[in-house]
Length: 495
Image (spheres, helix red, strand yellow):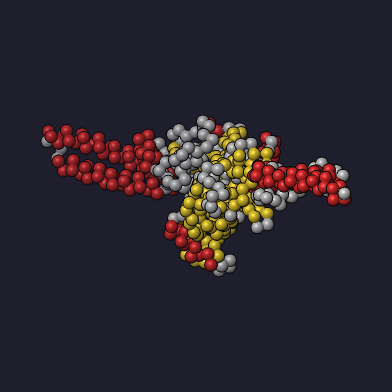
């Protein structure tokens, strides 16, 4: 009787055990999300307990239901609003596809922008003694070559005497020419002996020689060939000089003009273009105005200093141990990059600069080798005020920057800005754009310097993948905040 009374209970437990086994097998075969909760519920029913007694789950608790690939993508993916994109600084310029390019491993050396010796500064001097009657320019003004700068009333006695003798000789030569023509007519009739005609021709030749010497003397006084020719044709003495702006690298144009020639002051000139055209020299800046109206100046005295800032040099200072690498970069004709630090802004890169030459001596005080890099300049701003034009150049002598000189070349590399890679412990990540989301992608960093990161081309990124070129650290922090203060430790694993 006792055995028969326990038989129904035994049969019931067998049915329950079989049901549990079938559910487990089905869960394994079908990969159900979480069969353990179903089994716990059945057991709890027979034990008289509720399913929540075994595992006290509260709303918001993290569980591992559905812990598959989709959940891992969500844990490593971030969606940003339009405002969030702008806050991070992401735009069409900073969301770019990955490209393979040649990376040049570089050393960083300090540099300073300097003038080109003998080219940047142009001194304008008067070749003759006189008095300044007009000053047509203002301090800091931009002027084009050929623009009228000063008018000077000449008081140079030697020049006045030289001009007087030159005009006198021209008159005597004209008299001799007319006399020779007359004697030729009367000589044909036999009224005058031929010897008299020959003496006049000798006198004419002497005057021509004297005139040639006087013409060269005027050139030595500072007059151009055109000015001497004008004195010869007009028979007028030069009383006033017009001094115009010279060209930066040549002096073919007349820098000294007669008063009767046309030369427009700066204030009367047509507005010049705001920016220099390609191949066209930019304006000269009057950096120093030394004289004033009414001032007496001697021959050779400087009137003003013009600055030609179209092209400058960057003077780099390399340490002795870097000399061999600098020489190799010069031999390979590798271009140099410069990083200009702006107050309150990010460093501005300047790429593709040409290394011009290295100094042949090491500075005894600093123990550095100086080398020079060509820096093309450009106009940043132009304004007109009171009939004068003022320009502001982008790069100025005295600005300090950092030069990146390449020492080794790596072709076919994935190169990203340093702000495109976030680090956490031993891991490095980039954020790839995937529709309206950004997926965090782990990468291997081969090389990192102050400005660039070289990523291993191991399949984690492919050319054409669009990644965030900046703000990777902010995106990493946003992803951690999204997951409640830390990244899911099970992300990237399947159970």
